[in-house]
Image (tube, rainbow, N blue to C red; front, top):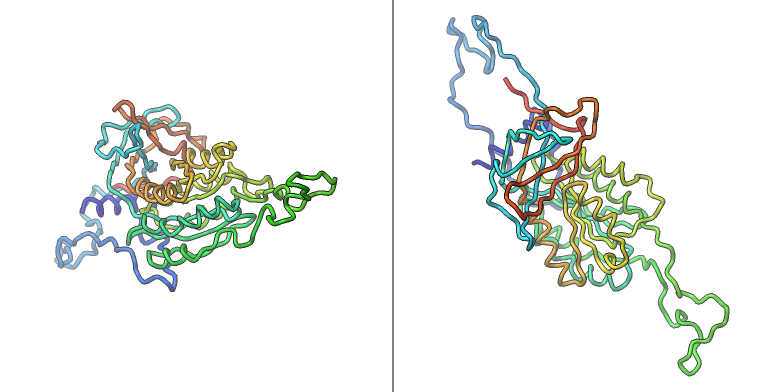
Length: 377
């Protein structure tokens, strides 16, 4: 019941009337639907009456009531927070008083707090231009992703290289998600270097002979992967999902990115922050050694997500469940901005925990133009 009341409160604070929220539209393949949030119980079946005995419309103010209700709108900022110890284990026993929130360096009062898990809306975004070894590792692990989603979660599947490609729209049907991931073939377009007997050049007595003729497949073709555009497209898919859900991008990538993106990093981060979307990046292959993780970490750090590193298919399978568990089980802090510069649209955020030696992950800022409000009487 506590979770239901808090979910209804979040819907109200982020947009007023919950009927105005954009609801997920199940695809034809969906056979399961998320549980609906039940309405608040009624106080009684009879309508209130006016002093004259005539039925009175619910919520109406009696003519004799000189203290008419005045409605005000309080702007509220929602901040999901993950707290882990040094060993990476989630800390789940913190309370409101354990947290401190700073908006542009000014400490704020936390007006709403919850440690209840939220249902997920996720875009599984998969790099489709990996080298053969990385592709094989990801291929073996894909079906394990579905195990991290529950009946109230929804997921869409997108691959990308130069352009994003939607494999399946949002679905609550875990069996359907599992089937789509199992059928997905990574690198089916055979990008990158060309393998074969011509790749090594002419050989005499097992010794390479320099001929001056360019060798076919001797070096990889220039990478043309638009990571920023892919993340932006995933953000566009998620921005219309309900604000009573955790919205995440489940990014599996080697971190390479071209210079030809239509949407730069700053614009993409702005879209994600304005719509409360977090990025959880899983770096595959040798991205860490090749210093290609910068983009993955910027998206994760900027949005309050996280970055994980995997060296083989077994590690990948284990990480998938950690990602969904961490995304679902976050603390939710809500505050009404006080003392911040009203002329600024972007504001920096800092979350602290009074308990020492804990790792805190929360988004780095928010936009005033994107925050919701709660109507108060």
